[in-house]
Length: 258
Image (cartoon, rainbow, N blue to C red; front, top):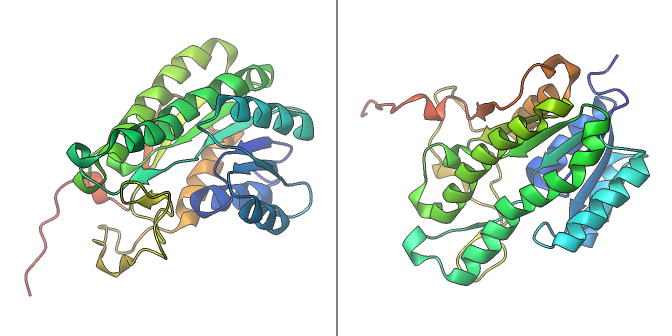
C-alpha cells in the first residue's frame, strides 16, 4: 500500500515550487490533495497537473477570512483533514536594517501569522483523526542569512512555532514537525527586493555554494521528507526539525584553493 493511502492533505502555497512538489508526491503516494495560492491561473494549472480529485482554492495566507474559508472548503471537499502542510511564504532580499515596515508586515503576516492561522483553523479537523502538521521553514532559520534578514527571522519563528504546536497537539495526538530546506533550485519566486512582490525571472543557481553532498537541492528532496512526516511511519515523531540541506549547516567547510 502507498505510504499516504486515504490521507487527506491541505498544502498552502501549493501552486509552484516546493508546495507543488509536495502536493504531487502526496498524490503519487495515494493522498487526496487540496492546494492554495493567490494566483488563480497558476492554481488551475497545478490542479490539472495533480490529476483527478485534486482541487485548487484561491487564498492569501495573510488574510484571516481567506484562511478560514479555505480550510473549511478543503475539509468539505476531502471529507476531513489528516495533514496540513504550511508552505506559503514570501521574502525580502534586503538586510534587516534596510527592510521597510510595509515589507516587514507583509512577510511576518504570511510566514508566521499565516502559519498560525492555518494551524488554528485546521486543528479541529486534525484532532478528529490524530493528524499532523508539517511546517516548511528554511536553513535560514537555523543559520541566518544577512541578505534575506527578515526571512531568516520568520523561519526561526516557524521552528519554534512548530515545537509549541507539538506541545499543544500532544493530548489529541496531533503531531507538528518542521522541515528546513537548504538551497533548492530554482529558488523562491516571492523573494524580491523591497516593495516588489516577486523577482523577475528564475534565480541563477550557478553561483550557489555546493553542499557537502555534492549537489544543489531539488524540490523532490523536500517532498520525500514531507511524505515521511505525513505517514504513519512517523506517528511517534513530533516537535522535531529536519534539515534537508545536503549537509550545508553541518559546519564550516574549508575549500581547497586551486
